[in-house]
Structures are given as C-alpha cells and as structure tokens.
Image (cartoon, rainbow, N blue to C red; front, side):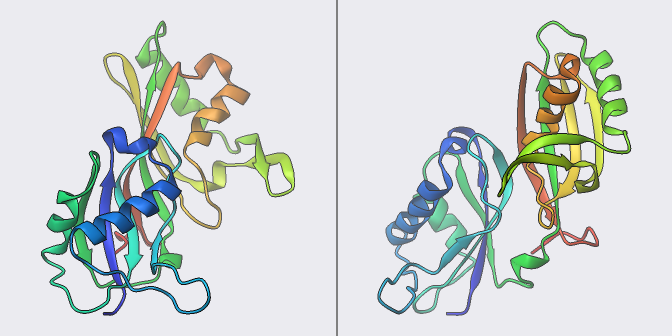
Length: 219
C-alpha cells in the first residue's frame, strides 16, 4: 500500500512517553489492531514509520503526524478507530489519509502555553510579557551542535500574544517548526535568562495546529 499519514493526539499521561517509546507503542498498536506494517529491506529491516517533529517529553499535542506503509490493503476510514482502541491513555488517532505534501513543507506551529504565577498578578504579567516579546530581538544562550552559543529567537516567532486569566497567563504563539526550529520551551527560557521577574513558576505548552509557509493547514 502507498504511504499513508496518521494525525493523532498525545495528551494527558501520554505526554511523558518519550519519542523512542512512542515509536514502539505505535508498532505494537498496529499489530494489536490487526495491521501489518511494511518493513525496509536489507540487513537491518525496520518498520517504515516516521513521526514528524518529535515532541519533547512533557509537551502535549493535538496535531501530531506519522507517515507509514502497510502490507496489503486497508480501509483507512476504519483505521483511526481501530488504532485508538488499542492505544494507551492519552493517545488518540483522529485521521488517516494519503499525504498531500512531504513533511519538509511543514513550516509553522501554533502552540498554546500556560504560564502560572503563584504570587504575581496575571494581568500585570500578561502586559509585561507582551512588551517583552515585542522587542526587536531576543538573544539567548542555547545549546547548539558546537556547544553553547548565542541565538536570536525573535525571527522564529511569527506572532505571539499573552492574555491574562484568573490565575495564569495564556500564550498563543505561531513559531517556526523547521529552518529554523524553535522549541517553545525557549519562550519561557528567554524569560529566565533575560527577565527573571517575568519567569513563570510553572509553564507548559501544547501544539494546536501545523501550517505551510502560507499559513494553510498542513496535511
């Protein structure tokens, strides 16, 4: 069968499953659901599955993508339900289809952050955060292939808006997914480095949607 693409959610307790363990989980789920993955040829055959933009442990997502190939034919309309039925808590397959474009064309991520402040007013924090992220440049220390170095993350932020809630600040951001890749955790790390008075006591992020460069939803 030609290459297919899964769209799935990874939330709740599943956010603590590592990328490697997720790959193993997916392989077992296909087997339990009665599907046979196609394997590569050669001396070290392996299942032909790949997950786009692996998540960091602890980060949730409602828009994960996985490409795969099956041996034989399958009704792809039934596949999401059958796979979800044998998945661990927190993983739910929402769609299966023939991919329209290669993963290399994926450009932007919409991420939603939650910044919690124990003893600071969320409204004051939201206003200050918007001012911070509006700066012309946000240069931080980050790990690179050559070690630690300075990097301006501002060009990788297409848009960002912070809004106060009752006890936390919600951060809505569209960031670069590839070339360059921006880990959303760096949005909070920038505060720790450059404006510790704005650093949240706790921060978490969820991927909400993925886009082409023209901001059309990626499929």
